[in-house]
Length: 303
Image (cartoon, rainbow, N blue to C red; front, side, top):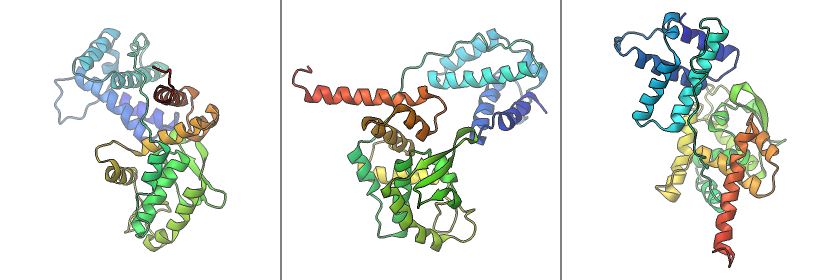
């Protein structure tokens, strides 16, 4: 077992990282060592041995990061890549495979604050009402959109929720988030009603291969994350054509609307499933920017 395989096992078993996270970390590490071993046959599987990791020092890491920058890689991507590398070498140091962590002295590139896009309340209303409720697929799609906006869950979280984790009487979903952490997401009246309307459709489509997932295709196949993503983009394109709207836009809208209407930041943090309050604080900046726009447009002495 090479060093990367050991690291992947550690991420999965000890840190309880999702498969997506493990793949992302592994891709960053492989990229570093594929650049360092440019002469390796591309058809040959890259093996990251103890000898290979011991050859990496801070100068080689700086050269690697400089190369990423020269190739036009964004600061955000470089920062993510460096985070993966730093975690990898910290693990190797803990295991006694290396004595010093060459990434310890690396500084993360300074990132500009990225304010997430969101929809207004009226725009959300338009999107939620876009699926036609005179067809089974439209009834399902409206339930998907209502569930995403009502709960603020990530699209991958919604795709994985089972029937036993949905309580329409109590108006809640049991959600498994990042790192396997569980939380309760709240279903509002509209989402609950849409899901109730969808259940007879689901029953008619269920062919026994659904693994009890809530949202199905006409053939009874459980919808994956990418399928739910297509549902959102399909109706958004019908409404706004070139505008980029994703499931995460609904999550951003969920948080922004809660804060705009007086919700406490820590309550929103819990509903979103953020482990750090700093992650949730981005939405206070969204609300502040929005208030500035309203002020500048409406106040006679603003300009």
